[in-house]
Length: 105
Length: 363
Image (cartoon, rainbow over all chains, first blue to last red; front, side):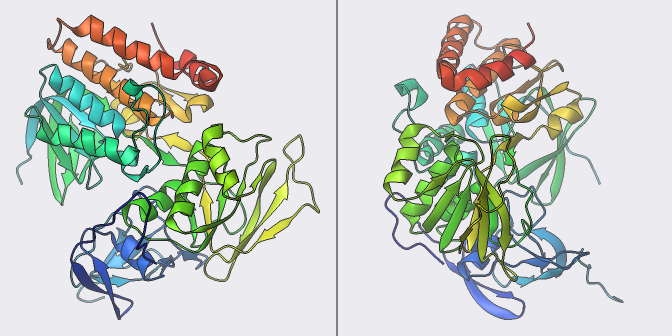
């Protein structure tokens, strides 16, 4: 959920950007991380852990903890807390350790 | 492919308060500085701080962290002797003193004469059942979402930790429009400065001291949490459970200095709980056991941002002086900075820091 009124801060949002998450289209803003755009849309489950298949989400937001890894444009294990949103990105929930999509897979 | 390697005078790793001040102090003395930050913008944790700092004017009293960040960043980016690289991750510190850097997919190497490591700290976590559920965040992560991107991670939050960060972030969440169900603190007392704690108490947020979180619960995301009381030995007291329906849990349970690059460089580290964990041994100029390698800010020990700024300046000053710059004004400036640091660390509040520093300072 986006904050519209804040007593101290002014949020100057940039241009709107379209992206897809698990096949559905969403909008975020230029300058945001993928994690921020997903949270704005109410999405907090980002992946499933490799062994126990538990839902995982954002924890540290500075690229340290490996909790928010997702598959972006076919590349697995992207730290979406520090990866900026770009137009047309294809973001997918990651299952386990992630698989690199390649010819023959 | 050809390896790019550049010789630089001073490399500062980390663009938070310590790194920014280190770069400015060194450049103002005349040295050429490269400042590297893995984030896409400078300022470190300052860009998330909406509260006013306090202390004397030289400690930037009454300034909000966000304004300090803008001011320092402006000075750094306009300084002719500083090259600031953002989105630049230093991934290695090799035996020959070379730094490996990755920036937007490009890999290059720097060989600095002096290195100032100001990599900050990362948030600790806490072990309890279901602590991996989505909706459980470090306090800094919530600050990033709320104060940098203007997004609320949920509607109702339980804060774990009543130190300065936990209480300040609670106030920031209230300002942003979230509901805070309670603050839970394992210690018998509130660690935060009273000026911060009083604000959240006036806002109606209960602070449960001698309590900890027993478990979180929810299907695929947090839906609630149970806390319980701890006895004098820190053991849970069965039967004291309290349930909170919350969709967010915020952990403010301490920071660990990020010392990986210092370890790679071969600096001697010591485990000092008063400073947050493993920290490097250093001298009064913040030079580590590896000549030419300095440490400043939370990587040297977790303190307030004001102390990080002073430490950064002190490290930058000495690094530049050791290269022959700014010698004329060196001693007076060093004494001024040290005096400010000592003042920040004085009194009962600074006792823990002074105890920790006594263990890592070499003559």
